[in-house]
Length: 68
View (cartoon, helix red, strand yellow):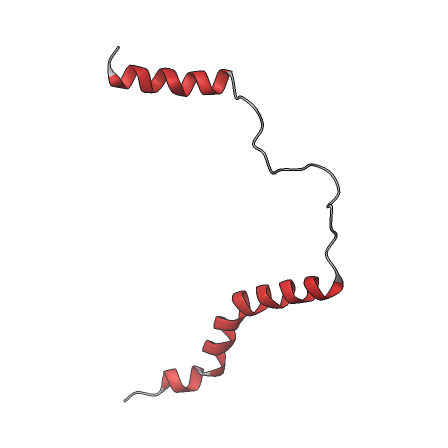
């Protein structure tokens, strides 16, 4: 069987028999719920990552308008 045929057959075989579920995923409630401090740190990190660059550009907008 040519290489392309074997490749196509392997794709079809994996779709028919997906196999065991990947380990490490647990459905249900978390084993160790996050505390308030961890939640605040995570939200702060997301805020700084998403809005920090935009705030930097807006605060330096007058500097960018100057022609040198």
